[in-house]
Image 1 (cartoon, rainbow, N blue to C red):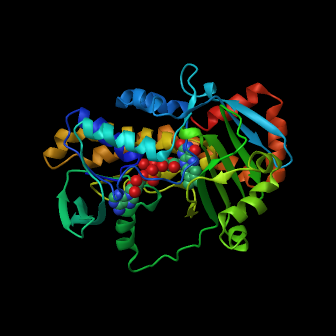
Image 2 (tube, helix red, strand yellow):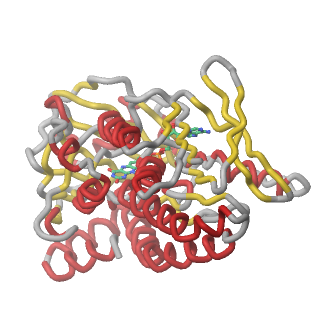
Length: 387
Ligand SMILES: Cc1cc2nc3c(=O)[nH]c(=O)nc-3n(C[C@H](O)[C@H](O)[C@H](O)COP(=O)(O)OP(=O)(O)OC[C@H]3O[C@@H](n4cnc5c(N)ncnc54)[C@H](O)[C@@H]3O)c2cc1C
């Protein structure tokens, strides 16, 4: 049983199903749906799409090929990173809306034999002696259904809907105080931006950064993060935050001068970044953002979602015979933890360090100046966000 139909959930579901496992995936929304994201699909994701059997349909969905990412300091200093430095053998990145990408992945999951339930909200866990045995689903018309499962994957993104339920139970006697979110992210599709074709542009400014790249339909996707304090000072108005905060970056002001939103603005609060619990309880694994939320400007959150979905599927498939005999979860979860750590630990550290620098404009300027001088340093830094 998998809760969440984003890249982590769909990827795990496809890998499991094509290798003979019976999989049910519950997604609370009806696809296609908009999603707040930079919509920069890094080149390595295309290798995953190939393994999942959906590369062709992703490439022919009308998205834009992105050949390089250009990082702009406030005053206009820039440094660029070619997409071909990532992935194997000269691949480009892809600019494609999440509405389209996620719908394509979910369609592929259906074709692969996954039972997909949309508008099905995973609202509770079925527990037996501290072990998760499945979930309770609520459908759009209020109906409730119990789904029993040998293993459950929480792929509900940053909400970690299932993992949080387990943590809540543990905290009943020691309630944790929720910290207010320090950052807010906004996104809209724009027309009339002066985006250079084939480029993803990243703008740094005090307290945050933003990214602009082409997607399908001749539109650009603008996604930016600002401090909650600045957002409040702008009356929570995305267009005002854009003008008063993001436009402090000279390149952003020029590129977006005549741009207009062609879709409603989406906004979310960001509580924090980094590792969360991988195995919140016996019988429950977390994948994608539910396992770790990597700093967005490195553009690899979707990649981590696909990779961790695949790792979770591999661990489950290896131990499925033992699970069917009522054992095996301990070995499965141990293996998932080990392989996850090997794959992501240093990447998460590198991205956290880069983000800290990015949020301090003076530091970002110095870094852009220093890194821009050497191809070798730029390439090593770029690779560090993936290793
Ligand atoms: C500001 C910002 C910019 C970003 N830009 C990029 C970028 O340019 N490139 C990149 O690679 N990554 C980017 N990311 C990261 C990327 O969006 C995530 O890493 C990725 O979406 C994680 O995929 P996921 O499948 O884990 O979760 P999600 O994509 O969040 O999918 C989770 C799914 O679970 C569903 N769900 C939630 N709760 C329930 C429930 N109780 N029951 C059933 N379903 C449920 C949701 O509806 C959703 O469809 C960005 C993130 C942010 C915040």
